Amino acid sequence: MKAFRTAVEAGDFAGLGELLADDVVFRSPVAFKPYAGKPIVAAILRGVGRVFEDFRYVRELEDADGRGSALVFETVVDGVSLNGIDLIRTDEHGLVTELTVMVRPLSASNALAAAMAAQFDQIVAEASGESA
Image (cartoon, rainbow, N blue to C red; front, top):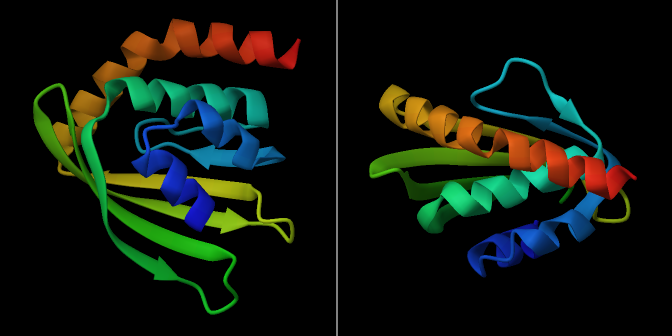
């Protein structure tokens, strides 16, 4: 998904909310339960923008139907190098309906979990403000 990639590469995590479907589902690499709905997913993505350092996509794979992409990335979280994949699915309007993130190695997953846990209160507050 070109618009998603462009926004992330520009550091425009705040603008990603405009690219999400209202019923978007986010599957986190550090949480068992998926998050559903535009307000919470947009807030999570803004939180990610606050913890990722030196983010870059290094490869993109696209489904034949053009509605699914795998974006391979590298970044740093709290001094730990992280490799990951954003699996994105879009609807007929080009809005993101599913976002699944996978990361490696375990040390990076742990660093990401800790960094995002520190963001959680702010994420919930932002999501509550959006849904009001």
